[in-house]
Length: 290
Image (cartoon, rainbow, N blue to C red; front, side, top):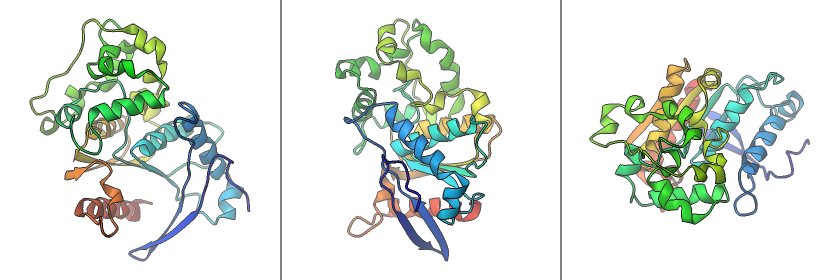
């Protein structure tokens, strides 16, 4: 049997839902602090391209016309980034039919979107924790955290960020029900040295929400699940809107009473309704579209 790349531990899960059999391949990319960006992206891309080879798919009895790329949270980030990269590879003969992103983290440009402001102290994933995760991912300095919180890294005088600002304008990308009465936090004068120290903050392989429209037009049919009580809510909502504007068929599945990471809570004694309803909705969409 053809092995997947060495960096991946893999197994098959055979799960029966409503008489539909799902075959999932689980990959484990290398983690911080062993390696930092872009190695996780390279791991995920390398394993995916290996799996998409016709002989490998045949060996595992996978229908090449029914392949989806999916991930949750940081995995949603990698799923989106890998899908974008695959869409630009002219040599690929087999491509994913769908992508499904579960409360994905997609940008580090603006830490003051309405969902970041609304949920800044929300348990499971408060804003300061998410920012520290970004710093860890980029092997940055925690001393930068405060500047990131107030968007000093994307101030109006930071030239590297100017071309990306229009791609992440939440005042136009979010519905009024999400914007509420929150105001944008845009600094006039910031710290360009932050981007110089961590250029990955604007690298679309790390922040796929900032991809250009030409790349978004190439994306497959997409499912995005978001939760109201989550700093990352607006990342997913804005990506859905940008994909929709690019002509991609998108399903935005929003849950008003759920929280980041809730889908893991589906087994007793932590079989929460939030986990069960999000899992069932995700599976239902796959049933109907894959």
